[in-house]
Image (cartoon, rainbow, N blue to C red; front, top):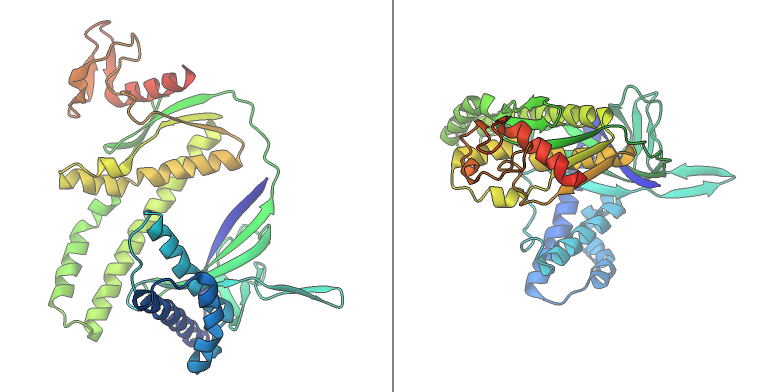
Length: 373
């Protein structure tokens, strides 16, 4: 089975390499914004015409020749994709790129052979901790200490500079892997929530750490401090970087926690059943506290992780109907209690059979039963 994977490394470029990386960010942004402006002024310009026009733009702007040419082509491709998404009503109208947000550029891997030896402009050496990139040469990297090499054929690499001023490279590879189908011996139903992030039909609960809430006071203080700074000053930029570092800490903690939960669930069960959640509809709730907690929980990300890990480990993953009333039905007798639409009711006795139910565990059992029929 052909699988696409991405390996992300922390980059440690030299000062000269940083200058070239930042130049490349600027050139990519220039090309993207130039053709976006051209689209606005001259409607009807197609992708082939833009690529054909690119050499002319480079002749008019000599600084574009200093950077990797495939980056400029990828900028045109990104703009065309943005317009395709806009016309398909998947996203809004493309915006101009700003130099004050996260910066990135993508470069393609090119291979050649000479005297029976194969050469590539992108190479990763995990033993010596270096990556070779076009125009940059060898750059120090950190990450994946438990691996000697990355498996698969390298397609491209994306170099990025986060708002924390840290540099990263994400290498996309493709390869054929043999996935052995697991023989189903265990099945689990999963209810997703806000109070507890995951509740399994086995009675196991994974708490919602609400990491955003823990750093909320610090963020408010830093944002008040930022509002008092003169925009564009050194102190303004320093405070902005402090805020970015707090957000990065929240993001990394959440990512690590969700991966741990997904790994544990997929490793321990062969068939996993979850509800198909529509987070966009859930955000229509007018309570700001609920929406903040929902955003902090990252339920869609968790489902995506479980689905992906199930796929590569040969496990079976099901989603039941979004509007299945799993919380309102008694898992013992099947009686539907309309009063349970009130989310404040966490435990109750079934009016029909008298069984005592925990709201979330009962829901996870119903999700399990909903998949098995």
